[in-house]
Length: 132
Image (cartoon, rainbow, N blue to C red; front, side, top):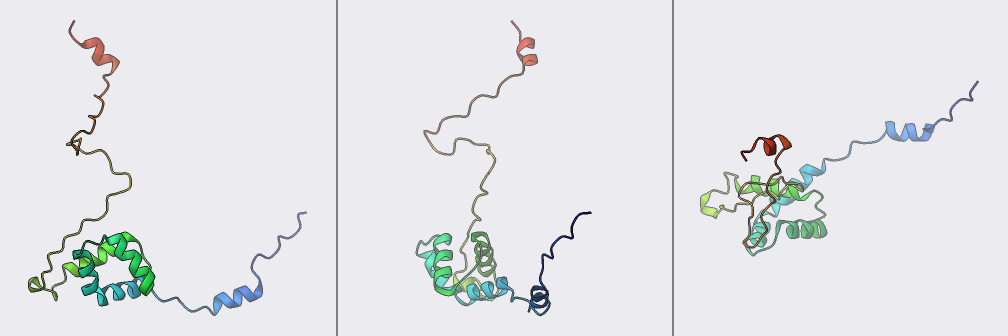
């Protein structure tokens, strides 16, 4: 017979887990930090800072935890918030960063001087059926 497997969780660990308190939701805290700092964030963006630069500075200064995409979402929500209204000049438009593996798009090339994509290869059937 095989020996009993050793206990992987100690009694102390079980008790510690049972008495553990639920952690606070970071996203609510982060969203609140962005909301409170929205006027300053807006000034930075209008001064030419990238959203990534703003995210890094928020992380360094106020401990903001979250991804770049999350910060984009918060900025979009705050930009469209009705309490800011059009009088506040709330016409800041941000596009989400491109997907890391964006598929090729029509209208290629996007920049002058960029090489054209290779012509699609023809199947052997198409080659054999071409008129002579």
